[in-house]
Image (cartoon, rainbow, N blue to C red; front, side, top):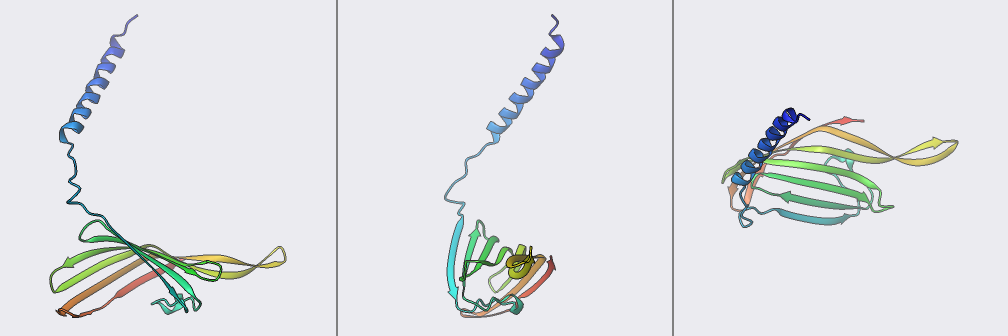
Length: 170
């Protein structure tokens, strides 16, 4: 039997494996756990009217709102928000907010963000097989972009604006 062709292939594969393994072990570093901190916070609130800062998205009924914040660095954060109607625990809206502090100076801050995705739920009546029933319809909003400049006037006073742009995709 002639193994010369397969031996060459085997040698090449072995050489590639050793080279990659050496490079991986040579440049591997352990992370100092004291320098990298992942902050996770959450809050829950109950409201009697399901208010939203966008009036057409207000529920108008008692609701529960759950806010979370995951911040692994000084600039980027992930801030999902889950809203539910208290009646039947039906979803009201889910917003997955990503924010980046573009400018983080002592007096001036500029944050940009996007909602990937923003989902708004509403109950719609439908007739199926002659029977009326309620279905939950979802509206997707993409792109949703936000811009929030803020200027610190003094220790306890600041002035800012919040611009939000969104487009519905049904």
